[in-house]
Amino acid sequence: MYEKNGEKYFVVDGHMHYWNAAPDNWVPGAEQYAKGWIECFHAYMGLGPPETHWSLEHFQKYSEDDLMKDVFEDGYVDVAVFQPTYLKEWYKEGFNTTERNALMGEKHPGKFVYNTRWDPRDGDEGLETLRHNVERFGSKGCKLYTAEWNNGSRGWKLTDPGAYRYLEKCQELGIKNIHVHKGPTIWPLDKDAFDVADVDHAATDFPDLNFIVEHVGLPRIDDFCYMATQEPNVYAGLAVAIGALMHARPRFFARVMGELLFWVGEDKMLFGSDYAIWEPKWQVEGFVDWDFPASEDFADYPRLGVAGKKKILGLNAAKLYGIEVPAEFRLPADAGTPAAQDDAQLVAGA
Amino acid sequence: MTALGTVRDPELDEPITSLGFVTSCTVSADGDAQVRLRLPTYFCAPNFAFLMVADAYDAVSAVSGVRSTEVVLEDHFASDAINGGVAAQAGFAASFDGEAVSELHGLRADFLRKAVLAGTDQVCRPLLAAGVTRAALLAMTLGEVPTSAALDRLRQRRSELGLPAGPGAPLVIDPATGERIREEAAPLHLRRARSTRISIEANSSICRGMLRHRYDSAGLGQATAEERRAQ
Image (cartoon, rainbow over all chains, first blue to last red; front, side, top):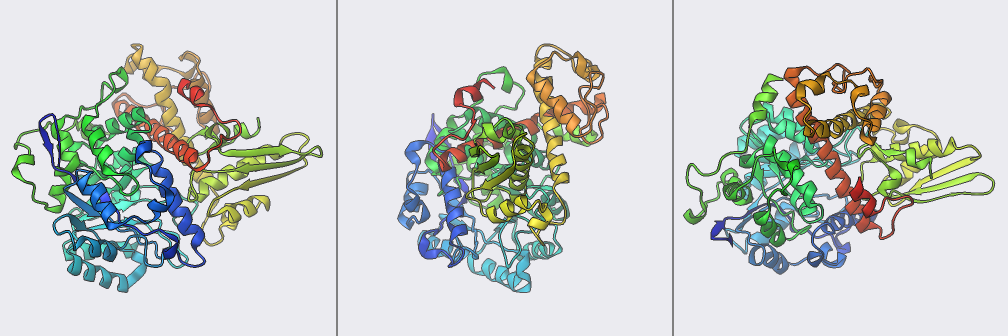
């Protein structure tokens, strides 16, 4: 819970991790990838305020107590959504698995939502694991990382036939929310791996699932926005957008927010800290204080008010995950003018 | 270094020199050139990385007096495949045997089209701000636009794609077909142009930040913070 100027914000961190990327977890022979991955993450941390930077050693492996303090005690988060990333070709026990998350979360009832994951290249066995994870952890969402290496393959797309089997299984098992993260290496390597067109197809073919495109489609924000405006079940995950830009490049952050508010709208944007890349504290504080710079450059973007910030920081995610929001944090039924969606007509008429 | 300044990151549409991607560049008295390149992360997309290494190789090899060229990409998960492939002039598909089905021309063209869209916003936004109506903008030719660095750049990108770029060509065109944008499609087209520009600029700022975190030294020919602000 965060309070500022008499306004109370219910905070759902829609994207965070509990990883072990220390050398004790590196797969022999794949050390360079495990090391490269975590150092790349650590460089992202460098884009946050200097006083929030950690040493690489601490960043590789932080404790349960660190997480509870950074996210809940200091970070204002009420409920956090664990988004697993396996990377078992590089990390012996996985980078941050559903099991690891749940093992920790069990000690803190009500604080966490356990998303699981799947990879279409795991075939029938993976489908069975998915069913098992949903039963055991009550997962209502999945995190998909399309650039994961798997047995010589460097990635996959949501439109692969194998992926559709999994999406059908998700519907059958009651999973509602599919978080998609695009990564750089994907077969074939001569195509743009970050292309979001496959999410567009899957969102059309699975209208009952919600597709939360993580990192707002970075580095393809433009294509993502254009797709999201046409697909009612596509959402923008703000993890990385806030962390990488709000402090380091405030004017670019304002432009990106303007684009998202215009094309996607405040009802379909979800806060995520991407902890432990960045701590939620400064992101929540900064986001509540944030406004467009006073300049003509930003004049034609939709404004974001208190109601919109409440939605983005927690209420939208609470709705997607069925999280009970105490009455004091809810919006009156008619509060908040949704961001302009004139573009939907533009697109329809195009 | 001048030759390397013509090599662009195809995704960010900026020279690899000003991005800070050039670690070093030396030419021996006998004309043996050695270039070392670096990128913001270990996992930067291998296809774009390959294009930059290959383009650097071609640009340096074309300099008169250069007898041999070696370009080495450092600290990247695919360094060996890329460096070896470029040195052997093997092409992308052969360098990533089994992982790619074709060369990267299509990828490069896709991103040039984005550069044209972004450049359209760069050129049109000041005109609109100065009071030019949308209808007048759509009727304008490239020759009627006051000269600027942004206009030169837009024309250059258009000609690279084989799109009309002469003074009589329309200013606002579809980067896929080269056709003039019609009035009814213009609001959406101009909005997308701005989104594309912002997307590229946001990526560029993140890449710069990551590179700075990874290497604490400036690259050869890297624009200083002051110069960047002025851009």
